[in-house]
Amino acid sequence: MDLSYHATILDFATHTVAPATHVFANGGKVQDFSTSGSATGVGDVSILAKYNLMRQGSTGVALAIDLTVPSGDDKNMLGSGATLTKIFLVASSGDKISPHINVGYTAAAGGTGAVGNQFNYTGGVEFAAAPRLTVVGDLIAEHFQTPTGSPRTRPRTRFSKAQRPRSNRRFCKASHRQRGV
Image (spheres, one colour):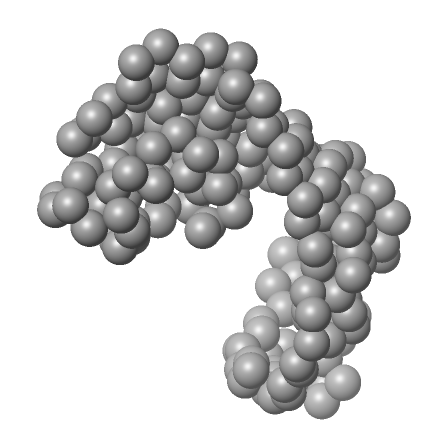
């Protein structure tokens, strides 16, 4: 992985009275940083359990729990360093066009404090374009409770094609969508 970024210090409060208060090590307000590295190994391991609360025709509602244990090396970006417990509700419906929604909460414990608790919600639709091709569009949002207690929301949009046999894509696939599978 290669990382390069351009950083600028915006010192709104001290720029007129003490302009040298906030500077980089080079003495300036602007600096470029770059680094690279690689790592190989096992990441964090997730265990998922799901219980179908209701199933009626092609509509279903399930409750799921996802436990992620910090088995990966967080220093080499192979894991988070924290134990994550996620409880969420999964609902899906339809046949050729299938809307779905996931709503849940993730509690983080341990680690360096870089991973906080979060409220997760996903909504989207699947379209069975062909017997072995499903097109999926999801709107994913995560509302983080940072370790300092201040909340922040990070919405994400994901559109993907899933090439799976149609018979396997039904209800159980919706529970994996939250992870980006």
